[in-house]
Each structure stands twice: as structure tokens, then as C-alpha cells.
Amino acid sequence: MIKRIVLGLMIIGLLSSCVSKKIYTDLENKYTDLKKENRVISDENEELHKANAEFEAENKSLNATLDQLRAERDKLQTDCAATANNLKNLQDSYAALEKNSNDELETNMAKNRELLAQLDAKEKALAAEQNRLNTIKSELASNTKRLNELESLIAAKDASMRKLKETLSKALNAFEGKGLTVEQKNGKVYVSMENKLLFQTGSWAVGSEGRKAVVEVGKVLAQNPDISVLIEGHTDNDKILGNIGGGIENNWDLSTKRATAIVNILTENASIQKKNLTAAGRGEFAPILSNDTNEGKAKNRRIEIILTPKLDEISKMLKEF
Image 1 (cartoon, rainbow, N blue to C red):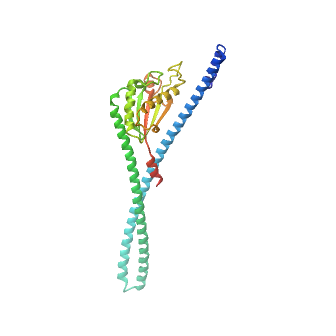
Image 2: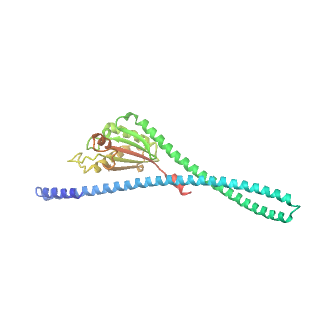
């Protein structure tokens, strides 16, 4: 970045010796504005990275809590079985002591009193164990109910995302083999569109065929208002040279403009809630294949539409545990 700034200043210096002071000042102001715009875009992209990291951390925490609740349920079930067994042993012991007490009553009163004392102690222990068993059963029932509700909610979210993936695949079937894929992973649905379907080299104007695909995606999103949508632009690592497309500073800038172009098409559908849409430029920094081959570069030049379910209900339920 420092080298680019120095180079820019050198160019401005050379220009200043050949043009009027007004032209030189205008060029210098334009250069300053471009630097500010680049900083703003970089800051926005960093915030989006942080938001995505927070979501992944929250999802990991939810799964850890679910595993912990399952372990606690299993432990309560084990304790319940052990307590029931202990209760049976106490009942058997109580019956045996009662029989011995009756048999020895006439011949050994002293021993009978001792047995009665033991019997009383066993009765108290039995009552205490019965109370403990009842408490454990109550806790187990309560935790099992909440765990089942949580598992049902998570399952419903997963089923909803599977249905969304199937709906998108069906809606975009006409674009199969044209650089478009739909897949579900990590609880999200990913719609990936290669640039050969969407853009010309160095351009962020969406072609007619690509526009049709984006419009189809928008129709599905309009029917799913509870889905958060992240549109990411990606490029290969070829550097931007000259005035490609006009005013593009680097791959990051190009990827952001392309992501924004997709958002603009989606928002043409009045049924889509704009607050659910986020545009982000990833530049060349999230490749899916090596940029050492033309095939790899072609796969890396893409738009990814990432659909994420809202987890407010699950988070609220976990806080109640």
C-alpha cells in the first residue's frame, strides 16, 4: 500500500509539471478520495469477517451446550437406575428384618428391640432414598422435556434448510452445468455462481443469463423472510491493470462491486426484506482451488450467496437451562 501511495504521489508530481495547478489539484483530491473509499471498504469487510466469526463461535457454543445437556441427561438416567436398585435392596432388607423381628419376638426381647431400631433406621433411609428418587425423576423429566424441545427446534431448522436447498436446486435446475452449484453444509445453504455465468472480465455488470439465475434465487428468498443472506464476491489473484471497467482499484474493490450488483438485482424483488441482505467483497483471499492453473482461477472467480437461519429461538431456550 505504501509503495502504491508513493507511486501515486510520483505520478501526481510528474503530472503537476505538465498541467495547470487546477488540474493538478483536482487529480490530487480525486486520489485522496479513492484512498478514503478503499479504507472504508476495508473496514466494512473486516466487520463482516468479525460478524461471520461470531456466528460460527455461537454455533459451536450451541453444539457444545447440546452435548453437555445430553451428558447430564444420561447421568441422571444412570443415577435414577442406581437409586431404584438401592430402593429395592432396602425394601428387601426391610422385609427380612420384619420377618426376623416376628420370629425372635417371643424368645429374645432385647434382640427384638435392636432389630426394631434397625428397622426404624432402614425406614428413614428408605424414605430419604424415595424422596431423592422422586427428585431425580422430576429433574430428569424436566431436563428431558427441554432437551427434546431443543432437539426438535434444531431438527426443524435443519429440515427447513434442507427444504430451502431442495427448492433452490429445483428453481435453478436450468442453470446446471453453467457454473452454478447449490449445497448445504455447516447448517447453511451455499449458492455458488462462477463468473462465466455472471460477469465479463473486469466488469461488475451482470449478464442476461446470470440475471435470470439471480432473479430465480430472489423468488425463493422472498418466500423465506427469516433467512439471513450474505452475498460474497471472490476473484482470482490476477492483478488489476490499467483502467479495466473504469475506476477499479484492486480485486477487493472489484469483488465488492460484483457482490453489490447481485444485491441490487435481489432488491428489485419487493418481497425481499433488504435488512436480511449483506454484500461483502473477499477479493482473492478465499480461493477454493489453487490459482496456479486457469481452471483453478476460473473456479475462484465466483459469487457465493450464503443463506443462514436465524438462531434467536435456540439461543433463548439455551439461556433458560
